[in-house]
Each structure stands twice: as C-alpha cells, then as structure tokens.
Image 1 (cartoon, rainbow, N blue to C red):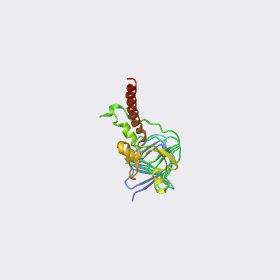
Image 2: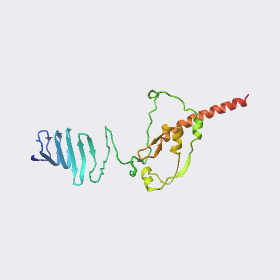
Image 3: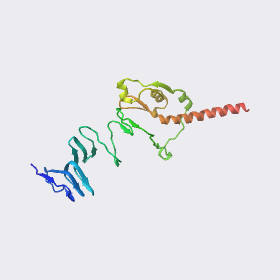
Image 4: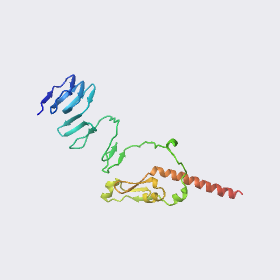
Length: 228
C-alpha cells in the first residue's frame, strides 16, 4: 500500500512529481504560489495558486457534495457529479470546444428541450458568405414557381407533452411547413435525430430576392408592351 502524505497549507512551492505510485496526496485549504503536478492530486476544500500551475496527469477538486472541478488527460470537467450544477460568477473563457448535453440559457433559465438555446436579448451573428468560399454559383431557377408552392401560415403549437419537450414552444405562432419547403428547396431542411424536420428560416430570404427579380422582369415586359 502507498503512503498517506498530508501537505501543510501556506507552502511556497509544492511539487507532486516525486510521489511514489500508490501514494495518496491530500491538501486541505491549501494556498500555494506554485503548483506542479505530474502524478495525481486530490484537493478537498479550497485551493489558491497565485503563480503557475502545471498538470500532466489528473487533478481533482471536490466538496462534500461531489466533484466540482476535474482536469483529466481528455480535458477539463466542471460540474458536480451528484447535482450536475456548477455556478461560475464572472467570465468563463474556454479556448477549446464545449459540448453541452442539455440546453443553454443566456440571461434566462434554460429550457428542458435538449439542444435548445434561449437568450433574453438579441443573438447577433453573421453567416459565412464570402464568394471565395463558394463554387458553382447560379441563381435559383423558377423562383416564383417555387414560392407559389409554399405557404406562410398561422398556427398553434401542439400541446402534447411528448412533443413539447422536443420543440419547447407553446401557444399561437406563424411560420412555414418544413415538408413544403423540402419539396422546392431541400437544402433548407434537415431531419433531426428525433425524426422531426427543421428549416433554416433565414435562407428563405434568398428565394424572395430571386422571386422579386423575376417579378420585376415581368413588369418590365408589360410596361414595354404598354408603351409600344
């Protein structure tokens, strides 16, 4: 069995690199200026490092209710293994990727709909559209004909709880029908993992642009005939 090593607090530098395999290293309410971990470290209580921290293996901070912060070889995990709740006050800067298994609320409580993002203010974003990224650029053909095959509707969201948990909406609304859009512009429709369809609403503007241009050409032809 390995040794049990208890570190005193307020040490200037702590280096866990010389700990033997199987040893348990425990620091309680420790305050270090430099922390170097090449093995494994377990912290119960608070940890303050005012200088640099180098971790090449695993590092775990936990309270009595569960793990709060864990550094593994596969990445960083934040969250309580019992409550799955972690509160960050201030800013959280993440330089890598973030995977959220449930929903996200910005300035508002997150919904119960998996994959949904809700925000209490505007969501400002720009879509990539530089011509240098594109090939085979052609205008949408027969735009007016396509526009005539889809409709804009008012409707009420189905209140069935089994459906509500998939979309998260309720009450009266307006919109299009994904199946109609899919018949004329399949590029704008996707089928989600739950089997239900969704539409890229913002790209419908492109169909309106080309439809208006076709209308303008017809008006010009009519005006020329009238002026003859």
